[in-house]
Length: 267
Image (cartoon, rainbow, N blue to C red; front, side, top):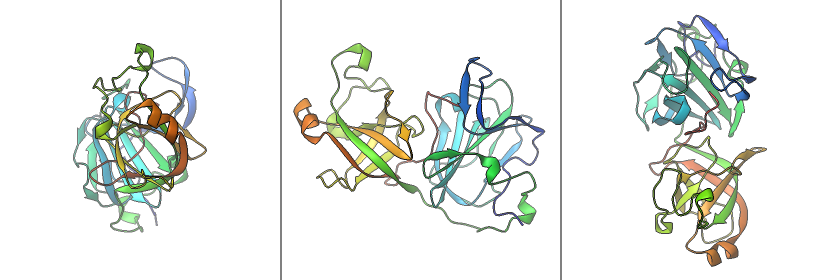
């Protein structure tokens, strides 16, 4: 009996596995953070396990994309979909139809890009589920999940540099930076619009919620620690606060969580 559900029962083959590969579009070696299941356009995509939809919409090179928080630090995501059948915040059951296979985003043909994260780190989906795990033999929980995920974090205060190379006073979406709106830069795997709540820094910012609207080359996930840059009101405030380790609550408060990129794709 299966603890999880294979997300695309009508797939024809695994067209690309997990790990480093020569990217079919860019022609360079890139890390592939999931498995590609070749399927006809419109083939149903099923929820791998019960949980809460944290992202449903366009997400950079992944095209039409859905991520689901299954609780316990486990998140799954589906990219290149032709249609999305559930919205952010929806509770889904294992085996529920959530989307349809397509070729949106950076894609060379119809397939499902299926990926998973555990506590913020990419993991091989084939270590959890196989094509033998059908809806009929599913033995896991019928419902569950949470819209939030708490991770280890390194928060760095920043104030925009007045030069075009570093984006100036514009965020990655081209909007003027406004410290009063409590925005932050996050790793590429955290979609724009995600809510990030600061915890455990021992400062007045604990409990303050920021919205992801920016990126940065050094803003990554290292050894399971998420890096976030918090926009401050001035250079002086930025220098006073510096860097602090703590925890970040990803999602909740109307936000989204999950791990994929927006504009920086490893699909």
